[in-house]
Image (cartoon, rainbow, N blue to C red; front, side, top):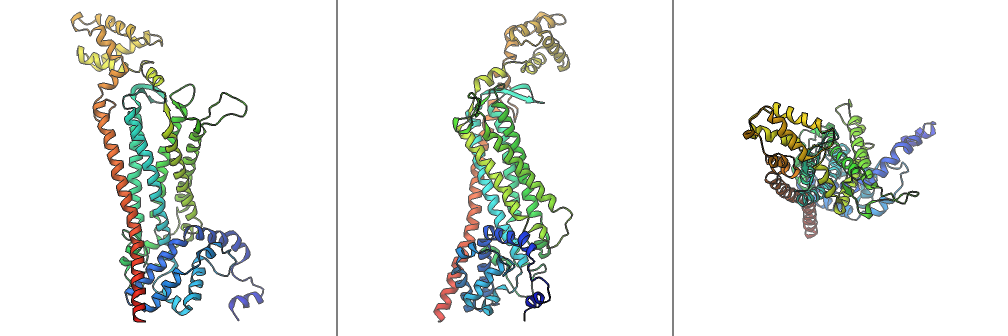
Amino acid sequence: MSQESKNTERGRPAFPAPVYRETVLQHIFADAKRYFLAPLLEIEAAHTLMLARQGIMPAHEAAQCLRALAALDLDAIRKAQYDGSFEDLFFLVEHHLAAACGAEVAGKMHTARSRNDIDLTMYRMVLRDRLARTMESLLRVRERLAAIAWEHRASLMPAYTHNQPAQPTTLGHYLMAILECFERDFERLRGAMGRVNRSPLGACAITTTGFRIDRLYTASLLGFDGLQVNSYGAIAAVDYLTESCSTLAVMMLNLGRFAQDLLQWSSVEFGYVRLSDGYVQISSIMPQKRNPVPLEHIRILSSKSLMQAQAIVASLHNTPFADINDSEDDLQPLVYATFDDADRSLDLLCGVLDEIEFLTDRMRACANANFLTVTELADTLVRETGISFHQAHAVVSAVVKDQQGQFDAERMAASVRRTLAESLPEASIPSQIGLRLALDAANFVSVRTVTGGPGAEALDPEIVRARDLAAADRQWLRTQKEVFAAGRARTLAATSKILSSVDTLL
């Protein structure tokens, strides 16, 4: 009689207890079918090929197992409902393999491995795909921003500090600031990818094995760039996960701030942005309304992704450095939901940017209003009269106050000349035309050619650089995906080779 039957006869519930099944195991099983079936089968094949290559498993038995893997009814597995017959998806697949090629032969596939290293390998395989998908979405946004920045590299607008108009700049200059944030986000994601894409397979439970396995071979078959070397860390460390989520949180923060600006700019009071009809929603009662609701969805999706990413990191705080469920079954789906929300927000933003209209006449008018150019007026006084900047600042500040909130460039220029006449000879006082030019927004921008500035000499090469970097990053991502695909190709080739060799012997 089985232990389960004995326990049931003694009044003890058999495993799993109903509440454990309903609150935990059913959910884990459903998540595993959704996320992990494909990588699990890839791992099964790679490990079996390695065992045969190392002489740990006879080639003909490995061939039986590989054929059994290929013949699995995946639709039936995906439709399977959790009933407690098997603890998890791994044991269900193992059951089907045993039915196909015998328990003794199928059981040899589990030589020199554990569910621990299988799980961590699956997690990394899924996460690297999520990282790649997010980087693809981010690249599309970067490419679109670079195109808009080039189109509007000379479109004047106010720059803001403390949410108040501060100095004139260009829309291209502003968008490049956002784009540089996204470039750094991509760089961080790329770094995270390099640390995620390391194989833990072969760490077994936590201390490797006495069998002479080849971890590098299985890493190659599974498309990893290398090994997560230390076996204890391969099982216990979670920084592959927390780094990825932390990096995603930073990107979502950057995205949310940009979405907030676009929302403000689309208000009637700002009037800088108009979304196309496909991206506005009407009011059920107010016929005039054009609500920029997609921007709100971008904002909440990015906030949701950010908070989920932080929740993942917080969930792992103060957990022991060991194999723990805290970082596994219940947490992994939250990771994927976090990346899904990030992708949704990026894809939606890209769609909005494809059809957005920037109302540049309004932006230019605002750049030429509200005393935004008076910093250049003070700078002009320093250059042309030789007075200190503090003196020039005092002169301009006094003149601004005299205007009583009514900006008039001609009147201000005349007022500055009168003020300077009190302390400087006529010959050293700048002309009315020169002072008036100093108060022009286009001139303000054009003279700011210092690296990083909005002037064409500084900005245009930066936009070109951003386009070139996006192209280089796209090529890198394409190559990285090819590494994943090449691993699968090597697995298929190795499988074909061992099957052919066994068939030849027969």
